[in-house]
Length: 402
Image (cartoon, rainbow, N blue to C red; front, side, top):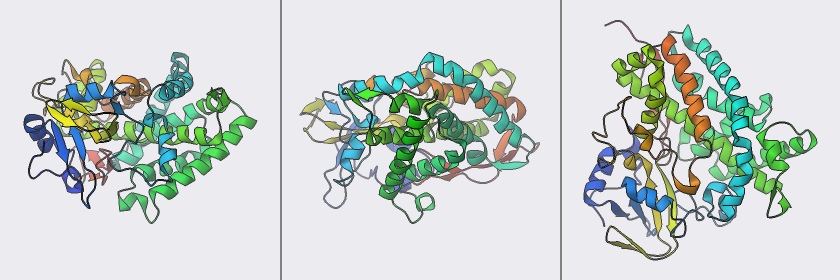
């Protein structure tokens, strides 16, 4: 079904936030929506209802992940690399890859990393607690996920800022301020070059880290080679970095807009875990992931054809009125906030979800008692993207007395 006047490809619709007014209209008028593409492109379907997104996520035999995670297919010579990233796989291949990397996210390893996360969160807040004004993105939100995933992965301290910059450029390929004069393809090649050097280091000097688990692992009865190792590096430095940073920033922005709820959290930290689930629901880090139909299929009476692209719009599902009453209200006490789709569902449920929750708890548990009231010093500068729901700069200051 089509609806006049809607263009989900237009970056202008994402200038202030996710296009929630558009999504609300689509949920009401065309929950299975056909979006034409310019220049005779094939077009794509958009799923905007919570139940439909869950169904598609749990049925890879119908909705395949293998063809890519974004709206447009990459160049043919890049496609095999993209298909080699675990998030772009279907079972049974996905199952084998996930079983390997899950060893690095075992409860024992998460227990070992928690003291590091909490200590680092304290250091980050120490660094801004005495400041009158600072950039929340660079000086708070970005630091904890960057150092945590690098620590977990075993990336040397001297390389961590470099990896963070690479991740930013991969995610910000549509934003000239971020990508500069390079291209996404060039940055991807640079990540793989770095991964080859890191793999060689871990083979020579194994350690208690995720990179060592991977280089010592096997897939299909064969040792993990540099190309496969590189796909894990791409996935982890992006997913482990960008998403948690984005939710931290979006969550803080919601609290700045709701100072009474911010005060409540500062007074009662036991509310923070549920508040984090509401942050994830209200503004998830990723606007969408893509699937491709394996066969002809009908959803809500709408026939779709094998080979059609299908986008799962998580921000829309997270504000589905059938699931979340008064969905456009940010409510730290929302009883079913955890029903959100921010981490996906099905076999692609985010393997780092517990790590992300730990980091979000740690940073807000440190930040809110010490800086209970912040305000915007300037309008946030958002990432130019219809994929990542990100903010690239958010200058804040201590709130002035009314």
